[in-house]
Image 1 (tube, rainbow, N blue to C red):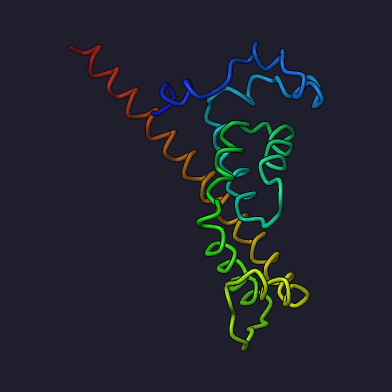
Image 2: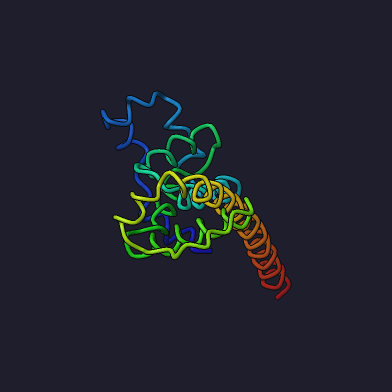
Amino acid sequence: MPKNHLRKFIPNPEKLKKSKVLGILGSQIYAANLWHLNRKSVARGFFNGLFWAFIPMPFQMLASALLAIPMRANIPLSIALVWITNPFTMPFVFYFNYKFGSFILGSHDRKHFKLSIEWIWDKMEHIWLPLYVGSVMSGLIAGAIGYALIIILWRFHVIKRWKERQLRSQK
């Protein structure tokens, strides 16, 4: 498991407690599961981060970090996964979300879609509902898949390690 590799990038809890910025969020921000890598907090972090990655809004990282606290999700992982939608991937992801939302709502737009900021702002009153419905549904689906994959892969890894230990002890 890349757990040991990821530990290098996770901040030290003692340094976090000295941060005045994080102090605004209260003492809950220092809970162990929010910063340690265990099966449940990592799976929840994947769900949370992938969900917010698909939501078109500013400050996705902040929303992801704030929701990670009541979810007991790994905060660094939740924040990092939001960057799946970065300036390069965002137009493609949000276009897919818009098309998916249009499909769900049954409002197939016959007009030609233009991938430009001017067109989007001009048509925002017509495209906001399919965009957000598609974004929420895509985020929930991606988050659920990420959660399930982490649980399954983590379990397979634990079983593999357990069998390796058994083989070593039999020799």
